[in-house]
Structures are given as C-alpha cells and as structure tokens.
Amino acid sequence: MTVNQKRLAAAFTIVLLLFLFGYWLYPKDSGQTEYIFDKSYDIELTDVHKSREHIDFDDMEKDQSPASQSAATQQTEDSGAIETPSENGIDLRALFSEGLINSYTTLKFFKHLEHQFRKSTTLGEHFDSVKQYLFSEFSDEEARKLFDTYKEYLQCEMDLLEEYKNFSGVQTPKEAIDMLKQIQAFRRERLGKELADKLYGTDVKAKEYAFRRAAIVRSDTLYGHEKEERLAELNKDMWGDESAEVDAHRNAYNQYQETLEIYQKDLSEAASEEARQKKLRQLREQHFSPKVVAKFEEIDQQMAETAESEENYRKQAKSIRSDEALSDAEKEKRIQNLQDDVFGEDADAFRRREAIRKGREKIKKESPLTAEDLPQAGQQ
Image (cartoon, rainbow, N blue to C red; front, side):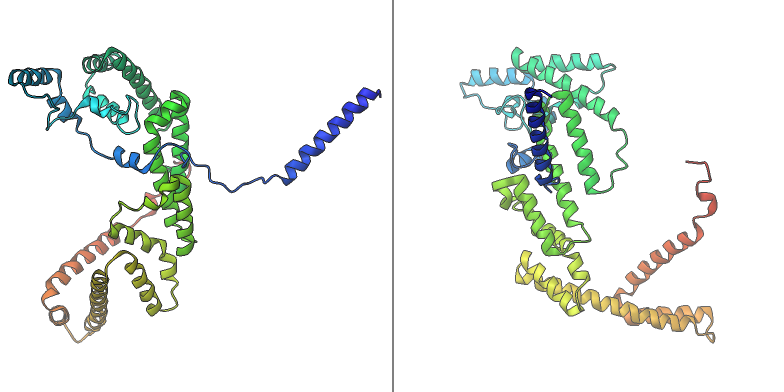
C-alpha cells in the first residue's frame, strides 16, 4: 500500500469514526411536535377571526354590479354628492385591499365563484363564465392573476377530492391531524408551497389547533394539571406571543364545559363525593361569579333530590308490582297514586318520560341483532 493510499484509508477511518460517534450522541427522537403551521408562520389569531367572518357575496352581486354602479355614479354626479360605497352592498375591491391573494378573502371568493357558476355544463364553460365575470370587475392584470389562480385552485380541489374519497376512517384527533397534513402536502405539491399556504394556511392552522387541543382535552390518561401544561405548551408553540389571547373570545360556559373535560379524570377518581364537590366548586369559580356558582349548586341539589325521589319511587313501584294479591288494574292504580304522591305536579311529566323510556326498551327487545344480521364467512 502506497503512502497516499494509507493516508486515504486513515482519513476514511477518521470520517467513519466521527460519523458513528455523532450518530451515537445525536438524539434519535427530539420529541418535538411536527406542526403543519406553528408560530413561525405569519398567521395570527386576527387572521383566523377574519377568515370566519361571513361575506354575503350575493349582496355584492346585487348592489355592486357594473349596472348598479353606473346608475349610482350618474346619480351622484347629477346631485353633486361625494361618491361612497353602497351602505347595503359590499365593496368588492375593498375586500382585496390587502392583496388579490390573501388569507381570508380569496378562498371565500373562489368558493363563491364555484357556486355562482355551478350550472355550467362543462368545465370549459364554467371557466369561460368565471373569466368573463372577473374581467368585468377587475383590471385586466388583476383579472388575469385571479383567473389563473382560480383555475389552479379548482383543479387542485377536484384532484384532492378524487385522491381522498373516503374520510370515514378518521375517528380520532390524531388521525384528523394526519389527514390534514396529507391534504396540505398535496396542495403544496400541486399549487406550490407559497400559494397553498396563502390560500389555505389560516383555515388549516385553525383546524390543526382545534384537533391538537381536542387530543389533549379528551385524553383519559392525563390528569387536569398535565393537560393544562400541555395546552399551555401547545398555545405557545402555535401562537407564540398571542398564546395568552387564545381563549379571550370564548364564552365562560364553553370554557367551563371544556374545563370539566380537562379535569374529568380528577373528578372521577376523587376520594369522596365531598372531595369531588369541592373540586367542582373550584373549577366553577374559575369561570363564574359567586352568584352563578351558587345557582349551579342549587341545580345540583335539585337534581340530587330528583334522583333520590326516583330511586325511592322505583323501589316502592317494584314492591307493588310483585304483590301477587293485587290485580293488574289495582297495581296500575296504586302506581299512579304513588307517582302523584312522589312527584306532585311533575307527575305527568314523569309519566311521559317513563312512556318514552319503556317505548325505547320495547324497540330494543323486539329488534335484537340476530345471527342473520351479521356478515357471513366470505362476505364483506
């Protein structure tokens, strides 16, 4: 072996050792969540709120058509008044004041165009109608950009529908996130990352956040404080400096209902009913005033008393039904009297609930799942 060959062999060995050393030391699983849209993307909470605002494009068609605009212009010129947008209509150009392709108007507008010209017999006819409309409302340059983008958008939507025909397999938040990742990856491949993220980014980020939040909230293995920690981490990862504002626009009752789900494991594993009620009160005090908390406790007391009354009633009704000395007519009479005594003026409402309950039980008994209902061997 020559000197040069020895040097090459030595160099190769050193490189190999460095690679293996780095491989052993480098963490193989960083544990970091792979978000579709995290805080690094320029999508803020205000964008999400804007994207959810309703735009009545039909009203725009009625009040902002070229004919109506022309008539309005002539009227203002005749009167010498200052021309302003219609109070009842939508200023189409104002919708795109932040750019023709923006994150909360363009997608809605494209969906409107789909619906507006849905009766076209062919795709070519549909595109012709859309093109004619856009060139009547925008400058040639703007219309061309919108039309070209619309064609890309619609073709992508049709291909996406064909690619993901069956969404029924999605049953959990995790599966929904995985599907969302696949869909946005498909769009990025077809439209390019910049356009796909511009059109769909706000909607996808809102859905991604909702799915990830649901996965944490619905977990049956985590305790409340663990869920709270993960939710805070999720908010920070996805919304950054806006994380404290995530719940600002949610009403107190919806937040409370979610809090109950967050602490479901804590409540179900409480050492006693007294401990459970104490924890429940603490959770309510986080969201409601003392007056509302007191009302909750009043309702709890009423429900507990109703449950106790129904339990006592069923015990006595069972005793009456098992009395062989009584005829069926006598049993029904005594049970009705018992209902009047126990439930008072609410007796009729109780009897209606009982009739519904018995009707459902009868249907279940008369329509059992039999062997004939099950798929046989070799059938799908």
